[in-house]
Amino acid sequence: MQINANISFKSRSSLIKDADYLRRTVNREFPVVAFSKAAHEARFEIPKIKSIMDFIIRKGNLLKEYRQDRHFVKSPFTFYKNILYSTTKEKIGACYEQSSLIELALRINGVKNCVKASLADTSGNLLNHCVVYVKTGTDPKKTIIIDPWLQDCGFLPVMMTKYKNEYKKYFKQPAQGEKIVLKAQKPQELTQEQLNYFKEKYPKLIISKKLFVEM
Image (cartoon, rainbow, N blue to C red; front, side):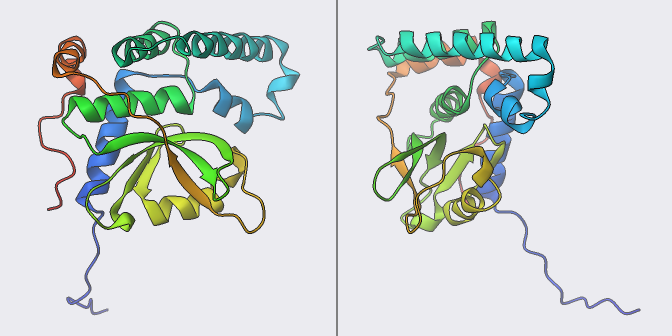
């Protein structure tokens, strides 16, 4: 059998590799148990085991308490400290907490054009899911979505297709005729002094190379 030497293979974009590397680093340093995802994936089995169901309910209620407390937090610095406390001490979090950790890690590594966003439909109705997006240029198609809850990342068109098809079972879907869009949340701005605090406390989140530079 003769192999065609002219065959070329398109390697994964270095931008996506950077996003995935950062996502994996954050997951390793903050091993949060996403009880909401676990409960969804095993929803037919968990109710049969009372002890596990009670545990998930208890942790879910605790997460709600942390979120209610954060409504009164005005300082972004305190906000991130609260996120870090609930994820490191209690090991709990869902898409919002995990996306907040990704956003913080990006800012620690000097990536400024990033923000948390909610998935919504074109009418502005929220679909109960949070991600982080990074603009890597003027082309919207080069915007990268990092989804730590679903443990995935990719360019905007690819991820939107996945949300419509592969991942549609995980969150509320838009009404017929509506499309899924990103609704940016207010950025949690930190001073350089505050960023330095997190760098010193969590040095393993510092990535040696500059992120999101297309090779």
